Image (cartoon, rainbow, N blue to C red; front, top):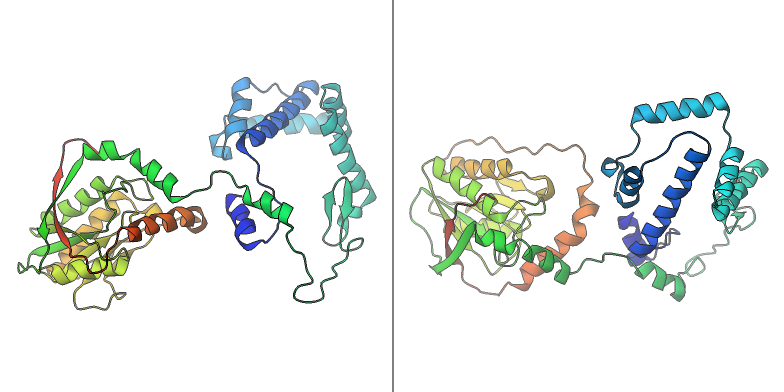
Length: 368
């Protein structure tokens, strides 16, 4: 729903949805739940508890509700079938319990169903009547002759709740700063130069990594992510070196740059949002060894595998690429806005020609 509201606002593709302030949405939900509860009680079908109703009112999805079980629903359905409860009974129950407006609206919809007008092409109900291609035909005659969003309607479309901006991202990230400070400390120890030790793997971190961004988009603390990679590299007898790069926030170059500094010629680049890459110094920027592009579903075990594979490449072994299984989660639209703002925060800290910095990292005792 939120994604479509943004589409309406940004592309002026009016789908008929109007954003509501949260208090208004809660009021409408409360009214709807009370109306349904009244019908259930009036018809003797069930008596929803206060906890059940409240959970539905504030839920973002069905998995957050404490409502009827499938078994309960089956029983209610059987009762409706056996007693022959009809929509007219529902309308009467609404009116008797004081939900007059809802009863009238439902009766109006039933009348439209009886008339069959709603079966017309491109039909929709507006102000109690059916509007369709029959009584409101498409008169489009080319560019400039179609529907245009009015200024009044544009203002409605712009009134989206919970608009995300850089300030909100930084505010939410700041909530994790204190906890991270108990887990990890970063200290600049000079300019990072070309390494000579063939056992060295460089981890390149982005400008905002641990500076004003503290969690990946999957919610992992950056200290935990970094420790998993460092430990995995050290477990193979190699030496991890952490370098902060301030000249870029791009994943590919965050990977290639540490690879060029590493004595082994292999480096890891990671952005604060969790996107990571293994790179080799002899490759083109976008021709990496492994890419972790799905940060919202990347787990700590994946980052550990990333560190282990970087070590394997440094040892000239054939590594088994880390596979992140997915159940088809629609990550894109859900994360696009936050990811874009995080990247803007990262690039806002970049400086052309900035020299890379060696970072001494101290992991403290508190678990991430």
